[in-house]
Image (cartoon, rainbow, N blue to C red):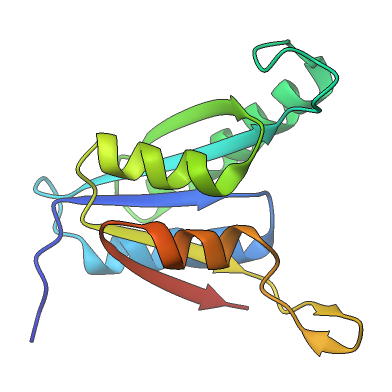
Length: 140
């Protein structure tokens, strides 16, 4: 059964899995009918105000979003990008998806181990548990 997605959110973290997640979003979308939104979340240290401008992190986020725009452009797609600052990425992703009526969240994840076991970290399980829409993972 083919799904018709109108809004796809691709949260990115600056890994090579992000490129593949965006390519997957493009392949699932229909040009002109699906809005692809790429979001980068800067996690602010609790010792700083949540809206404090930490220049290296801002620069890193802008570079990542610029790169994602060029990946989409190479595929012939236009995307929207957003840079957010928060204390935690998971709730920020879930809330943004709900507020923007997203149909699908696609997250690229790298294979990582913690204490010798495969680990999804804390963000992916939070999104999987709390998202109001479908969530798709692309593991690199």
